[in-house]
Image (cartoon, rainbow, N blue to C red):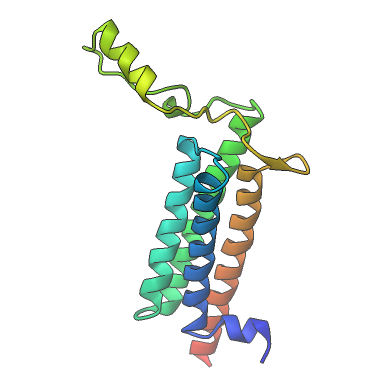
Length: 166
């Protein structure tokens, strides 16, 4: 049995989507909690895409596997878009979101309340690369993996559709 036919199996494909997502989330949490690489707001947004893909893959184990694998692929594409945006912020190609520049304040806050908020809020700017390998940041690797995962999910869904029609 080839890898292509294995990944198009109605139970294997959604399981692969769920496991790849869980692995990516585990890697992010290990980087944060074991290696001390604190995430910025865009890093958190990239995790949401993996959570969505994990949920889609898990649901696909029980119902509508092809639709859920496709939905997982779309979640990976959303993660790709966020990761590419993050790389652009890191490279100063464009500005980040409001959350990239510092904590938000209540407009009615006093100077003392703002100072306390600044002192008690751990802020990680989005434009600083916390870790890189061969000149590629974590956001860059996430973009690459998200693209690969999305293409694999769409290929599996297409193969599942072809097998359903046969």
